[in-house]
Every structure is written in C-alpha cells, then in structure tokens.
Length: 223
Length: 296
Image 1 (cartoon, chains in turn red, purple):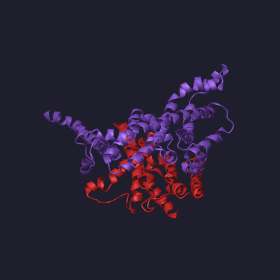
Image 2: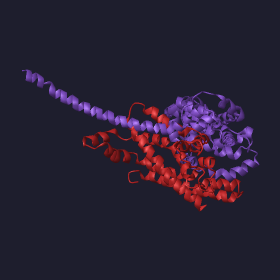
Image 3: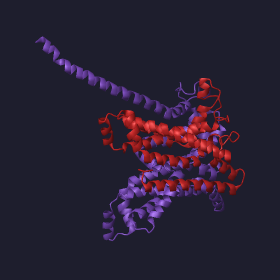
Image 4: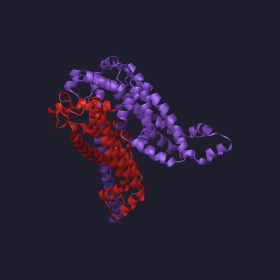
C-alpha cells in the first residue's frame, strides 16, 4: 500500500511536469503561427482520442527489447520488464498520449488573453520571453491552477495503461493505488479493503474539488 | 547632379535592407517555430504511423526494420486478424454499446439539461454542483458495490448492463455540456411557446431540440468515443469472448499473439481507423467537447 502510494506520488510529479511543459511549449508555438495551426492542433490531439489499449499496444511494440526502437539503436533494455524502469516507462506512454490535450487547453487559454496587453508590452520594448513570462503565464494562471488540481485526481485514477502494459509489475514495481484496489477486489477477494481504498480516493478527490470551488469563488486574482 | 541622383535611392535602399532584415528575422523565427512544431508532430503521431506501416509487413521485415515504410503492401495481416480476432462479432458488440450509450445518455442528459436551463427547478444550483462532483469522481469508487449489485441483477456479461453503467458515468458530463448549450437559447423563445399553450415536453421537443442539435451532436460524438474506447468497466463486467467489446477483445487478442507484431498492428487499425477518421472529419466538435469534458 505504501509502495503503491509512493508510486502515485512519483507518477504525479512526472505527470504534472512533463506533459505540462510540453503542453505549454506546444501551445505557445501554436499561438505564434498562423498557417497550419489547425493541422498541428489536430495532430497533437490524435493520441488523446485513440483507445488506451491501442496506444499501449503501439508502445509495447516500440519499447520491446527484441523489435522496438531500443533494439534498433542497439540498447537491449526491457523497459517494461525491468522493475527499475517499468513505472516511468508506462508514465512516459501516458504523457505521450496526454500532452497534446493539454496543449489544446493551454492554447485556448492563451487565445483568451487580452491582445492589447501584448501591444502595450511591445511599445515598452519587452522581448518575446518577457511577454511570455509577464503576460502569457499570468494570463493563463486560472487554467494552470485547474490543471494542477486535476492532475492530482487524474493521478489517483491512473489505471488503464498500467493494468494493460505491466499489470502493476514486475514485482509490484509499477503498482499504484487504483491497480492495487482492483487486485484486492478480484484476485484477493478482499472487497472490503478495495471498497475502503475506493472511498479514500474519493475523499481526496472531494477535497481537491472543494479547494477548486473555493479558489474560484475567492477569485483568481489573489489565488 | 549625378551624385544626387545616385544618392537619392540610397535611403530607400537602406530602409529596404533594414525591413528585409527584420522580415528575414521574423521568417527565421517563424522557421524555428515550425521546426519545433514539426518535431512535436512527429513525436505525437510517429508511433501511430509506425503501427500503420507494420500492419502491412511480415514479421521478418518488422524485426529488421520496425519503423520504416513497408516494402510491399500485403493485406494478409488484416484478413488474418479479422477472422482470428473475431472482429465481426466484437465490432458489432461495440456498435451496439455505442448506439445504446449515445441514445440513453442524450435522452437522460437532454431532459435534465432542459430542466436545469429552462424550467424553475428548486435546488437546481445544488444539482449542478452535484453533477460537477459526479463527473470528476474516480470511477473506482463504484467498482465493488456495482459488482455485487450487477451480479445480483444478472447484469454482468450483458451488453445492456454495460450500457447502463455508461449512461450513469457519462450523464453528468453530458448534462453539464448540454446545459451550457441550452442556456444560450433565449428564454423569450420558450416563454412565447408557453404563452401559446405548449407543454414543457412540447417546448423541449419542438423549440429547444431543433436549436440545440449541435450540442447534442457534440455529446453524441464524445459518448460514442468513450464507449468505443472504454476499458475499465468492459474488462470488469464482460467475460464471455463473444460478448466482448472491441477494446477488451483486442487486448485478449494481443496477449494471445503478443510477438506477432504485424498481426496485432492490423488488429489495432480496426479499432483505431473509425476513431481517427471521424476525428479528422469533425475535429472542432471533438476538441470543444473533450476539452470541456476534460475533467473526466
């Protein structure tokens, strides 16, 4: 249980930073270009609409030590079969399918920032980075806070890809709370323990949602 | 004289050179932007493109060249995968599940959204908060009680049993999304109809529905996508192979032929193609619906 929870914490840290950073980068670049913006947006979004079983199959193939990318490069690493890399490998696949979704959300938020602020900044001689740092990022702060809070919930729910790709193994090295709960319910037949885990997950979710509502009521300005 | 005529164009030339430099710098910046955008695009769909390539190759070719385009286009993998994976049956199951989930969710969520937007419901605000909570709760909460309940009701290993679960899990999101569409319909319209003696049901059917169909189309697309891709409930409640939807049967197929990458790639395409084609055709609806339902 403690191990699974620790894995959730690691999962949260990576799942927040990697897709978040890629999403911000993608959204910023998309907001700067005119031609093909819709095309790139569509391409980034595609992995998000593809079924988890299909995405998992694609990456099982690409991460396979006998026929994958590693094999092609001469690295004989069993990414999913080695306890030291299994959790991060599955997390990588989830990041891959998810960052485009974040990019589209951030792009919508960036397009909502008042354009006159950028004009004023240009008059004052602000460079591209300064504009990004002092106008874009504060402008999309409500969205970013929302995503951070939701990431906690998404982390707790993380199940599909782990269950499909490693089933929590090898040797529990990619076990998280949701997969542990499933096993408790159906492999160990301890329904009570599983139900208690489910209820605990819900409690955390409820707290997160309460924080979100509270911040929204209070107004984002002093959040 | 000649000196002045020579001198005259000079400032214009300087200005042109300067603006040319600026334009070049802009184009250069645009160029690096596009370069990074293309790299990100390759990262996003490169793996899926490799999957499409591999579906046309035999295993010897995949082993020696897992990422490059196929040298010959053989459809053997597709015909093999279709019969061995029994895709005719599982695709039909998934189609039934999608249709059932879409119809039921649109009906339930449509009526709820109409009530929450155009009728005076006591405690409507609390219901909206409740639905918001319901759309974000981890589905794992329902796992244990639902399993016992469904076993008692003989709804396990039953397509309808799965469809009912999808109604329940998707309705909160669908109601909130439809409500935001219905709120845009002016109250004048519904009140005028009411003055003419129309009942609430007639207003919903004759006035609101014709105006709100884009919202219903968005909800239908998202619910269909979720039911097609759904994994957690499908693997929990459907165990008979002939009743499986395409998602869990694909997983079983992949476990069975785990090293036959050509075969499993072809099978994956059966599952992937309808979704990607529909997405490309109706991209805006998918993106707007999914980003507003991103809470899930």
